[in-house]
Length: 115
Length: 114
Image (tube, rainbow over all chains, first blue to last red; front, side, top):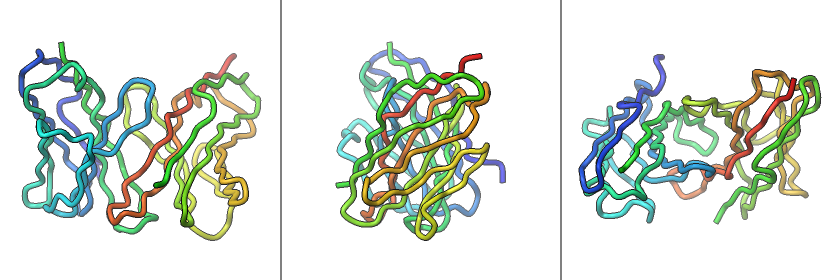
């Protein structure tokens, strides 16, 4: 169990550029979540995958955001035409049981700064 | 919809003193509740969780929390603070929408004074 891995840890980009983040969940975890955390706030849900299927997207996820989880393993989160308001910490989490009581394991996050 | 309120965005305690971090939730069904800790530049680490059964839950690093349905609270406590407890703490409720996503509070930053 190597934990949830996120890359890169930090990303600085100019407004209007596209960025992509990667999340490698704990192996055999079938559920994967993306959250966004801004300064002074708790993480907010963005989207959820069960295996390769994206089953829910938050209203926070505008059309500029897209997430994939090919083959139900790693996941990518892409932001197109970045805006300064996209600056935040993007957290990935995975879980196994799929019940309300299951525990989500979080990665260290990718901190995005849009200049 | 479920929600979580954490009272006090910043809490300071002296080393050795009692730690009390407050969390109130809103839920129309019995909730599953969690406390996570976040150290600088690290991900969230689970401290403890409440699902069903015993309302006093013990977690790692000497922390515990008590589920009080009548007060809709799930406060986190530790009898004696240690310098290493300085971090940000988040209370979360598991959402009953099929995804089991978490709804987090806004967090409480704990400062431990020597």
